[in-house]
Image 1 (cartoon, rainbow, N blue to C red):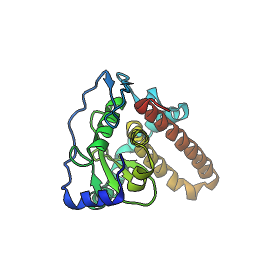
Image 2 (cartoon, one colour):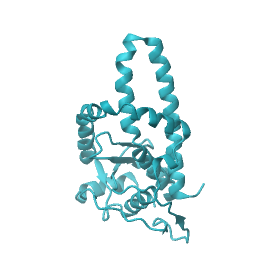
Image 3 (tube, rainbow, N blue to C red):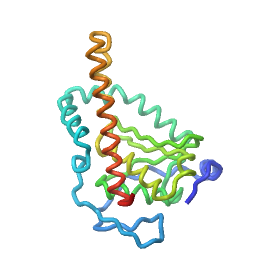
Length: 227
């Protein structure tokens, strides 16, 4: 399955956007990947939580961020306009994946959500770009999304694409976007008060972000179950 930039551009011009899917995703004991005709079955882990696959340093950081819960509401409010602006940008220049629009990618998304225990699938957008990339954002929690670029789809095989999608879903499962936003909110005023302390905390933040990426690589492995 290859989704070239020209095909995606044509889809964006000729097909209406599919409404966001909010239906629950029922768990299954085993899932056969939809993007391949091979008889390859992956096993579902019942009751999977983020702590089951988080890197130890990521898990420790998550426990620390729980202490910042009193400022969580303020962080969500502060980032609401930013997240809304990115949402508008996605629907203006991206193709929303759905059952009738790039259905193979849609099946990858649903299967990945099922494997990771996500009850509701986020929006998946394909945006035209010459750079292979994927990212996600969910600070408010009411409009999560994943974006993949056309260049990424062009250079990866189907199973690799699903691994990338699952990696981004791992960020949503672990709520990394919210944690990063909360950390930056705390560190910003510290930079002018104590540069040395700020530098030390920034170093720890970068170390945690590396651990967070490893957590999401584990999430991808749980989904594709292939190296």
